[in-house]
Length: 356
Image 1 (cartoon, rainbow, N blue to C red):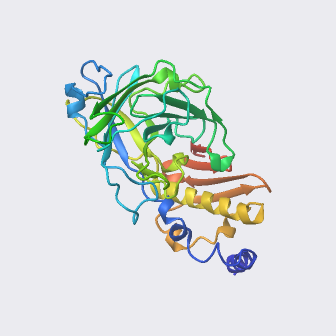
Image 2 (cartoon, helix red, strand yellow):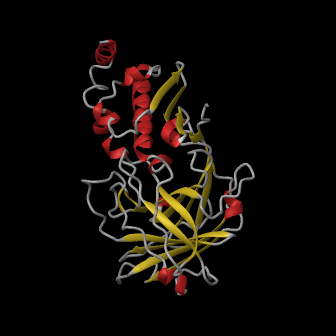
């Protein structure tokens, strides 16, 4: 009865918008299961020249073809794009193939806004917490725009263009002619070696076997003058916003050498609990945008069987909030783990101390 009363009051307060449908339906586009990629060690030496001649690159599996950033139901990109990854103790290697029948690039200066050209972008969060993550962009001239963000824009994030990825190696190979619309081109290929040391935060080495990173790729494509750009990505975020690290794919660093055995990708979290955590996060953001305050107890979210039935037995949900901050925690005792997100979009996965 108390839950029904709370939900009724909230529905009146928000014109019924929060409770018009369950959270999974309301935020469906932003709650799809992120893909995973098993990244294998290189067997030989990689020369970063954009040509991908090495046997290791030939063995590496590409990601699925990029799709519209908004996800299912939106138009399929007219050019195909995919990426591959490898790693060793010093670098994460990324290679992307971008089909293109008219290769263009005008910008020449580092750290200009590269997506004003057609571009390729990499987003990296090696410790998976949604904070202090990295972005590297390039155009078909191999001009670099690299930056670091302290947190996503949705949570008041700031970008630091002064960060230059130290030791980055990047090359572009063009199968076609640049800035010549009179002929037909085939594709351009981006290859980069990203040093682990460049991505280190708080002296923690991100390049270790068995670790998971969050990663995503974006291609900005200007198809017609005067029209808005297309945003094609590996993992759709559900809205035109790449700065949603919770929506990026999972990168698993395997200890196996490419071509010498395989690993089956396994998610690092209980994905049912993870999904609900972020559904509640989005609900908090919506509520704050309308009411300028946060929901302060789990009953206020009016969770239904649609959200709760997939959770393991004994799962506990807690909400702490003030007017301008919140912390949502979902504890899974049978797995001894607690998932937490706060108003800054910071995600943590904590062990639960088992009490005797």
